Amino acid sequence: MKLIAAGLNDCEIARRTGIPRKTVWQWRRMPGVRPRSTTDSSGRCTVHDFATLPAKAYCYVLGMYLGDGCISRGARTWHLRITLDTKYPGIIDGCREAIEILMPGQRATIVSRKDNCVDVVLCSNHWPC
Image (tube, rainbow, N blue to C red; front, side, top):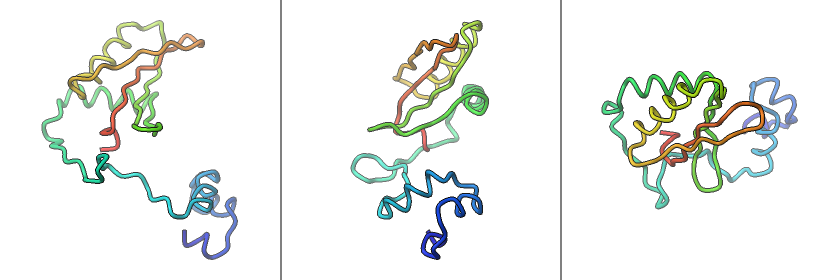
């Protein structure tokens, strides 16, 4: 925001900071929008005891996420999406099971794609946490 205030254009800010130009453009067009937070619908922060996370499942999902995953914001919630090759159904099942261990009571969805891949997806407001 300081570089915007200093009069630099979006491309120059992107070059200097490594932030995508489109993101800088959005910040310029919507200056009142604050960064996303980990709050519930009433605006209160959610509290988690990360020490109780199942370490094996967490490490597995983290590795899958770092390899071929992303967390993105949808209209009402966050989406964890991990893309996997259909040649390896055991890995797909293991990924789905590990995600479900991390988010008890929720079911991960397997979405088929046209490129011999599937997306293992689970939506939750807790992914940013």
